[in-house]
Image (tube, rainbow over all chains, first blue to last red):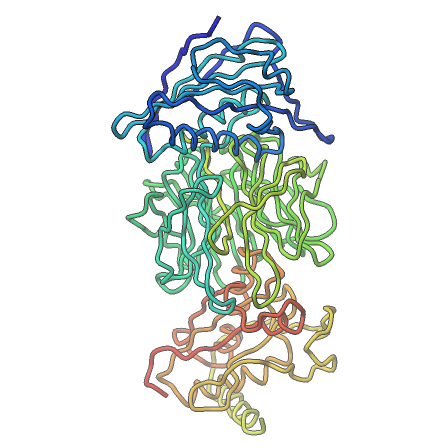
Length: 443
Length: 172
């Protein structure tokens, strides 16, 4: 009756590991939460405590179970049936599931797990169950990794559950590059930082001695492009995400900023200001083959590749105000795609290719919005004194951005919002934080 | 104030008499009127109440202000810039860095570009009045270094600025 654990995924840290590709289609109609535009009722699920393989794994089992729960609840799509309401418990991961116990508390999905520790290694096994169909949902999975990567193991479990229950891509096991801010508004200290998608494991990469802006992390989360004043005028630098070696991206002869990686991480686009004009350039990392893509007397900036890397969306005030344009990745005549009231800035192409997210300034307010590539179906998701700089979750369902409060004591914090406009949440950071950049799903 | 304009007049004369350099086109904003709320600028074009410092050893203002989203010089900036030209002529070993700034009501990267354009407008003006271009560098700070921090136009108008800062040279 109990489905066998079929895959054993070993998690490396921090970089290499195996890809988690799970669950070929189940035989029955799968339990599925449909994400639609309308108001949704979160799907109730239960997580009985993950079972420790030995007494010394008990604390780790508790922590991993909690992160899995937090990941799922944080999406706004799922609601935990609290432990206090549980009728049954799971003390043996291999024992048959007592469906009646979970049906009675109206948990539609059940996540059971077990955690073992040995030396520096942690092993997590889990199964997902459709309570009302009385059947497992997909295969059991096992993840293994070093102890310090225990949160990644939990995110991998939650990612598998999320993907099976929504039919969408996963996104919890991912990293964010951002700017940690401190000090007075007139002389803000800004430090380059990275953290997990949920704000955990934050790490400072620069010491605050130089002003740094707008880091952009590669999809692999291994490299970061950012703008720094370390050499005087602002210039784009490239560094390893674990810290260490930092090099100037390109010497253009002007001030450079607004970099972004191509989706495959082999190229970078950025803008360079020379006098009153700001234009867009592309370069191949390593080869350093610099190509200028725009030549206007206007401000062309904030370029971003399409998921296939064949087109670039950017903002330009060539028509009088900031608007969004799309051009071929090799240059050519740009086509304007934004036509609404107000100004449009900081376009970012969805990893699914279907939408562009942007900052919109209209009526003295800042908004995060999305539209299709032809400018249709524009939808504003947020509104405040200053909302700016959206970045896509790896699955194209969620945006992170920063919201800055006004005035002398004001400052930015990071938020996430679903592309339906629901589930606005602050991402916990120690102090002020801005300019988030979301990696792809880690492997 | 009187002295500043006197210095500027002298420089203009020197230029006209002694320089054969090609004319540099410096756009000056044709309409000084600003449509924003509570503008700090007098609608008749009188100099705005500029917050900022002075160039070393002088009472020459180091700051000029800009209209929303504009990089062109406002008419009320010309007097200050002419005085800066005079100061540069009196201190021939001195180099300056023009620091372009923007208010916080635009996106970060656009504001970097805007600050570059503002600094560039000032540099172009100084060079057009005879200051050697190798004595004038530019840098943009976008909205990163506001001088005023309140959340209304009275502060934003002060932050849309270009500041001329003395760098290197003999300590004046």
